[in-house]
Length: 210
Ligand code: SF4
Image 1: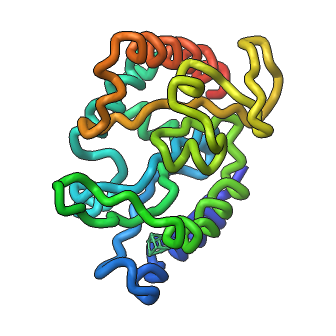
Image 2: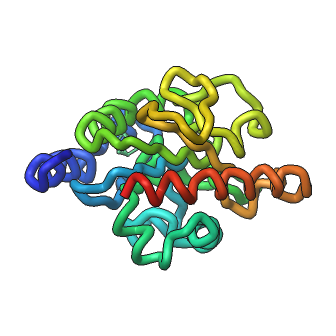
């Protein structure tokens, strides 16, 4: 388990990062993350949005509200409990800006690579037995090349093999869709059933990995 000093040092390094500004991808760096040294669950999203960049806390806007509803369905008693027990970060840590159509820009491969050492260090320090992967960039990093419908509702080991409920493999990877309203994937009733299945898989895992 990480100690507070190690984690504070890591967070100081990440929060002071301006690599994407120096490389010309971002006008401003405002890294966002939250978590504690004793967290055993890590949630990895795509990148913070505008509200998150303003508040410097992950999953604050509409996506955050939806995500917290999902976590409540998976057994977390409150948002405060979820935020205390889950280390929350993302594949890239800064708001990438908007696209002309209005949605958030998907960070480029180059930005993902620039930010990769931060996520690698977070994983090495926290060593979470359970990773919740939220959205396409997180899926691509850990379970590449698979459609969302083949991921949500299933649990995988770190080699990408699907595992059953009795597995002792660690870390476990549990993919979720992105809770953003921009995603239409959940409009399909069949996909909502997959989300339901994912949250039912998460409930006992989150309880066991306290
Ligand atoms: S996205 Fe990552 S690499 Fe780029 S400036 Fe922010 S923290 Fe640094």
